[in-house]
Amino acid sequence: MKKQFKERAVKLLGSEAEDYFEILKKPLIKSLRVNTLKINIKSLVKRLEGKDWVLKQVPFIKQGFWVLKGPKHIGNCIEHFLGYFYSQEPASMIPPLVMNPKPGELILDLAASPGSKTSQIAAMMNDEGLIFANDVQINRIKILKINLQRIGVSSVIITRRDGGNYRKNPCMFDKVLVDAPCSAEGAVRKKWSILNQWNLRMINKLSRLQRFLIYSAFTALKPGGVLVYSTCTLTPEENERVIDCLLQRFPDARVVPFRIKGLKTRPGITEWGKESYDSSIKHCARVYPMDNDTEGFFIAKVRKR
Ligand SMILES: C[S@@+](CC[C@H](N)C(=O)[O-])C[C@H]1O[C@@H](n2cnc3c(N)ncnc32)[C@H](O)[C@@H]1O
Image (cartoon, rainbow, N blue to C red; front, side):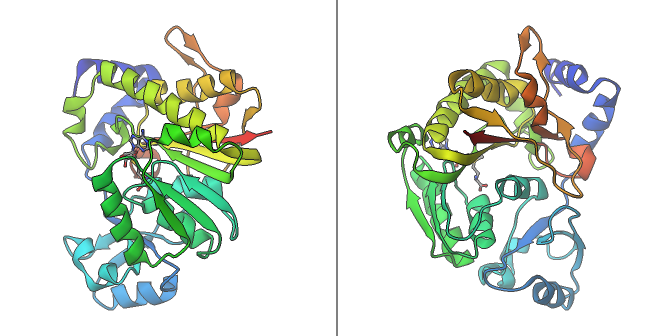
């Protein structure tokens, strides 16, 4: 672990930093989300348990399960090919819960590939309404397309645009998700090598890209609409700073508190080094890996007045 990474974690977590370093060494438990567009929860659980799988429900989402016992690669089983489930980390299931999409709404998923959250949003909408699933990288769009076909959605249009270009579609969407490209510090339990690439220059560069994307997303949102911003990282530069810049630039943006039953979260920070952020940013959520045995995540809910 890099010295600077450790020092920053101590600054954020104080005496709890040791718990954080310990859990990072523990591999993630495999997990899945039942695709209710194709099968109901009870039927899939019965079917998998009939094959000797041991499942444990994720406390904060009824479609989410940890696979305590099952095949080495859950993506290679027939139920996965049939689109009965999506292999998804529980923390990654939080942003759509915060968005709370409803059937009939017009949604933008600005950075959508490989499609875990697009498919979850589509299931929450019962495949009724319209989702623009966008990504900039053609290779990742191919994966997105395969996943959405497997999951069986028809309410999705895939676009390949630089997310910044959605500012040219002002006030169009009811809800927008920006699940931003990030330094992925929260995914270390899945891929330890992330820590080798970790550096402050990259973090600051990503922070600029994230601001560019969130400004575009907010512009594309209708008045009264909801924007959810999420990252699988815990660096304040990529999270609280991005939200603070949004609030400064758009006076009609307001951070909204939220709570998800069964999920332990910590408040967004309002001081980091020489920077201080808007006090409403405490209503954002930091999800630390040791709190729910998941990846690390950050989620902000913003409403346009
Ligand atoms: C964290 S991943 C998204 C994961 C996805 N939301 C999911 O849940 O499956 C970030 C995505 O942002 C895309 N991306 C990077 N720069 C972008 C840009 N300028 N505009 C749109 N998408 C971008 C990347 O290709 C990548 O697929």
